[in-house]
Image (cartoon, rainbow, N blue to C red):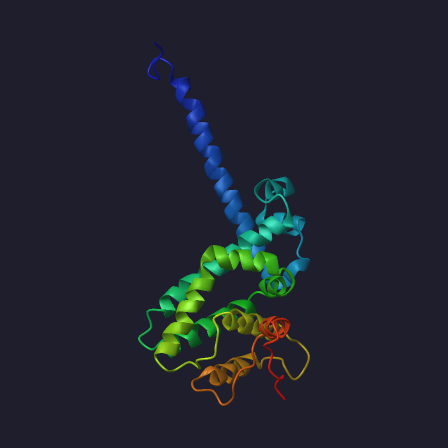
Length: 226
């Protein structure tokens, strides 16, 4: 029987394979970092060759790790939503339930303010966004944040957890606004919206339009709000 002691070259394929794997991991990390920078600055206009140049790798290397631009965008989205999910878990540990909700909304809005590409994806690729959010567990985390603050009596009772990502997405678009007078004013808008979320609320929220349409179809619809 041939042993590695008698045949030192038997270890060589394993060593080479490990080196290749380490090199591939480094290349993938470089591509991700380059893509973060480019998509944050340029939005979805950034192209795969741009990413390759910034990462100092060949275009073929980029495509080996991410066969299409959507695959690369999905990887970036996954990382962003993982960060948001981690923050939500931290917010659930806040002693003050209201501050947990407020911090999550502020944090999620700031992430978009720092990343033009993320804003554009959230506005134009809802399928990618919803999958990344679901994979990160954000729907369940948002539901827990909302119910916790409602139980404490600090958050209006008629808020649904689905309202939180809708608010965050809307605020994200405002962070990228350039026409006057919106430039630089989005932090004020965040606080205005947060103030409107506090219990008990000065007015009743209308039902989602999908619920209204369902009620009309079953003959249970009431008069629309005036």
